[in-house]
Length: 179
Image 1 (tube, rainbow, N blue to C red):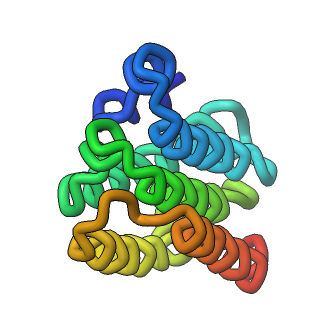
Image 2 (cartoon, rainbow, N blue to C red):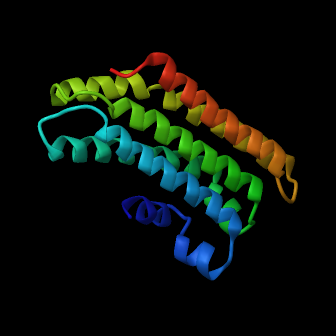
């Protein structure tokens, strides 16, 4: 529920956009955000630790970064308007795939056995830094699509880009292994 609330504060709402306005484009972003949030929470549950407080801390840390990165991309590229007002389905597909990929990265960054707060924060920085690269790539891609000034940015190319985000994040997580 926190993920849905944060997403609505940042411009895309389940109730307003999907249910009331029947905007299927917004559904792509919401699916990506929900799965990304679930991956953040799943990563926080992976490993052993002293109690539920460390799971809550790790889930909070990864979720805050997930939506913080969405905020940055949204402010730079104005994705929420392109999804909710222009109903550009390609933008929704790309944004949903990007959110899911960041959920993989941030969830993977908090996964593992708890040692200490300092160790967890250092591991998070060590493993989640690649999300900055994903943000820069997304900014460049959204700038290129926006510059085309077409009515709709295309489902096929957008699905391929979303799949590439997810694949790249999965390869990164599996190649580095779990701490």
